[in-house]
Image 1 (cartoon, rainbow, N blue to C red):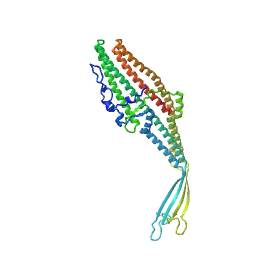
Image 2: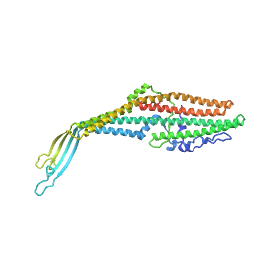
Image 3: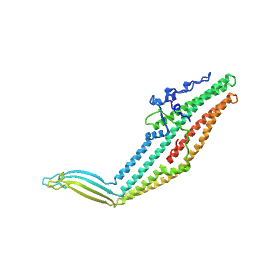
Image 4: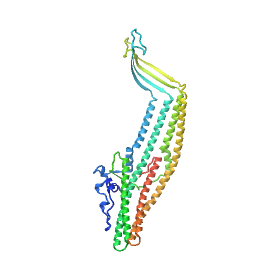
Length: 461
């Protein structure tokens, strides 16, 4: 297929919305070219940055830009990054912490010399470093749960990435199809004008009735209206794609026309194998079950003792100094070990365990659902892609036959062997067949992209 970039993308919003129908002269049957074709000044590629050449985009370029500029996808990546930080913090909680404490205690002395006992001396200074470590099953389970949730967030980010691919593919090839439809609409509009002129010439020669001229003029007007609709459809599809892939509003681009480039369909066995290995929905469900299992473990840790250690080194003295007034060093160390043994909390721990077990059971049911849904989606989406591929060949052949039928029917009309209705029907059939062919190509590309949501592999030229 030839490239349609320059022809199909070079119409600004004002040109498409203000471009009127062609001025068809009833007497001469001619079309005003200025009313049909856009001028060089109306290039939409120049609407964003005048004089700049249009940016040429392939599908991969569009995908890369969409990944950078899609707010929902970036939100999924942010969630994944936050989950990784949660995992890091949970891991840090398992390691000893070091703090440094500075305190000054002042106690009011009474007139009789008796000191109010609030600390160990009238003036007490504490300046110590502390190393603290806690050992309990709940902290270990919290770290493992955070690890599982980080994997869940990563899988969901991949789900968002694959969904973004489907959206970009649909919008990208919708633009390509709109370009092809515009070319077809332009061709049928020109063909309608030529046929209108032909009927006028034949009427002047007394070969056809005036009713043929009227029918041809109606058909020409219909074709011109279809051309304007094709222009508007192209504009809208370009705007949808521009919003998706650019951080600012930019119409200065054109696409590589690979709508009809070969794109093989993998076998069902390959799709099933890749889906079993790479499906993020199932992976997210499995990691959710893991996280729920660690929730149960963490809740059960409430039945078990917890152990903590503290080590202090520094001063705890009446003077803020390394050495006291008697010359003895104020520096010293102390160690504290604490064993907390749970005895009774009115069944709160048992309730937390029950909650965690309920969540785990629901997560297990979600895994089963995700696996069944995967099997159904593999068959459904593969059948959709296979059907679209099989129909695409027939649609292409129909478009070729419709074009040839239009040419032969027009020749037969010139020779007096066909009626005006046959020519009009051939024109309509050609327009419909070509549009169906472009829609079929987009459908097949979208079906391949949907398969990618299961397999992680995008089939692209």
